Image (tube, rainbow, N blue to C red; front, side, top):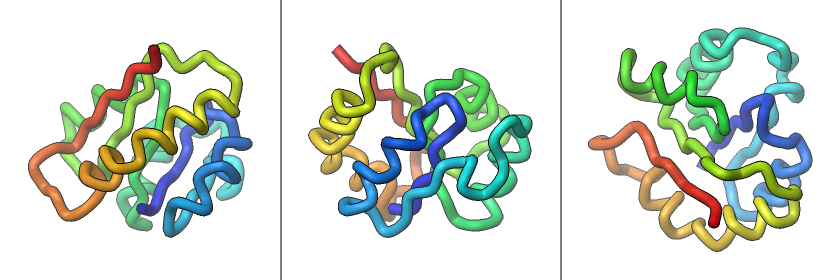
Length: 113
């Protein structure tokens, strides 16, 4: 999995996910913090990343433009980074299936309890 964390997802989550993923970057790692969502979308598409976000604008982008990149939209995710990391690690099988070879779906919505 090659993941790009959107600005509204803590940069600290990247370190928690790196042991489980091929590559995890945060938009600030590539100087795209404070950039329009469309710029982040284009970067992800050009460089083979899928996006983890809390932003509904990316949901609209995947509906309007298709994929790649695929979007993992986190809902009810205003929680401490450790709690979000534990949630994401617990959902790794689902994430791997979605972000693997499947080509039918471009959007996965995960809702924290």
